[in-house]
Image 1 (cartoon, rainbow, N blue to C red):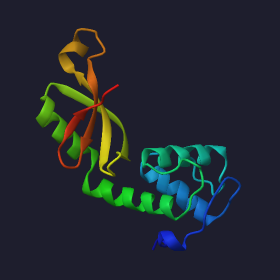
Image 2: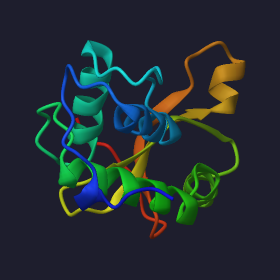
Image 3: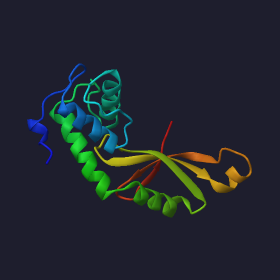
Image 4: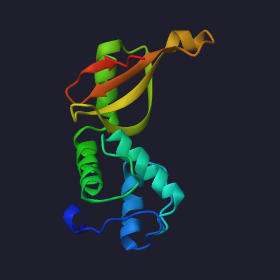
Length: 150
């Protein structure tokens, strides 16, 4: 059984423990690429900052109660809203001739709503030798498919 966010220690670069190993595995579980060795080095710090940024937390690379809680919440939300469901919403909105790709990371927007970021590509355009890219989209649990503005 995992410890509650409030009871887990604050971790930072230089930490090394089973908690660091748990942190690394949790990051890996939610699609962030890191090794699981129990040592909080530069790679782990950079991945933590990336996760924090994606979840509207201060990207300081220090894992305290807010980051632990965001990791826990992300795991739960991923079960409720898998990538396959997001792709179904995208196809409903943009058509079956579209190929979606993503890094599988569930992010948070300014309103704390969870979404996946996808690039959508038209199969016909790809068959004709082009990139096929029609745009980048945020697909939400509500079924909203919103084109990313630049």
